[in-house]
Amino acid sequence: MKTNTDELQVFVSVIDCGSITAAAEALQQTVSGVSRALTRLERKLDATLVRRTTRRLQLTDEGELFLTRARAILAAMDDAEESIARHRERPAGRLRVDAASPFMLHCIVPHVKTFAALYPEIGLELTSNERIVDLMEQRVDIAIRLGALQDSTLHARSLGSTRWRVLASPGYLAEHGEPRDVDELLRQRLIGFTAPESLNDWPLRDGRGGTFVSITPSVAASSGETIRQLALFDGGIACLSEFMTAADVAAGRLRPLLDHALADVRLPINAVYYQSASMAARARAFLDFLAAKLAA
Image 1 (cartoon, rainbow, N blue to C red):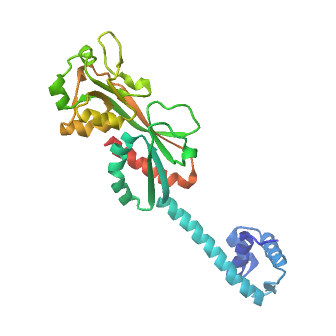
Image 2: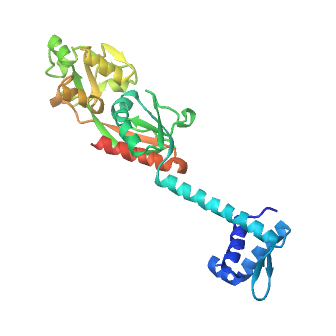
Image 3: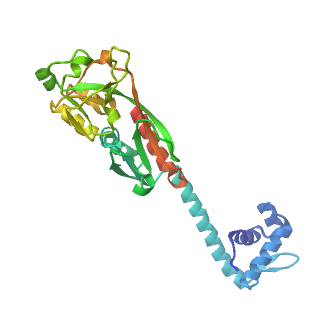
């Protein structure tokens, strides 16, 4: 039979404390329990490690040899436990994050340098998918999802929400004019999504009590980033989330339209992941960091 760490700890404690009674007190065990553990260890090794007399304990040659090895094993275990504790305190390891291209480009990529400076031991792997990915199949640790979440076994953390804006470039508006109401908007060149169809329902009050207006795109694309580029290059009017267009609006590259008719519809932003103790520290570090950036 193989020895175990409890037996090694008993043996080392008996030697360090000088007696079985003192070792039992230090280990908060019974004297008989410590004595049995020591005897069991010697039986497993088929060797006498300690000569017991009424006055003191004396190590045999085999005991001297085994004591050195036992101390090394226990020290190595302490080092291993300490390294794990340090690992938890200082997040480290690989973290795979997936998000739709617009969110990745506008909300994650600009902050990677800062995150790397704060957590140099976390290695980020970033992937972009316009559709929902299977975390297990794609080996993804965290996926950022926009919109209402479907029921699943995944854990989720809310990162906030973003508003929709109807926008066009100054060049397009100079050529086609600025729509003053929803009816005029629907006669313009509109840029929409190929799928899902629900993204072509724009959050506009139509004057008849409705909150959404269904548009028929003149040109459609599968990615919000492609739609943004089309709008920037005077391709038409688009309805896009604020997180990906705020900088364009601030710089004058895009102009918001029909704000008076815009319904305050929010697009939820959530992170989903499988609960895993091994990645908990680095996942928490990333999500706390990202949440703070989004809030700002």
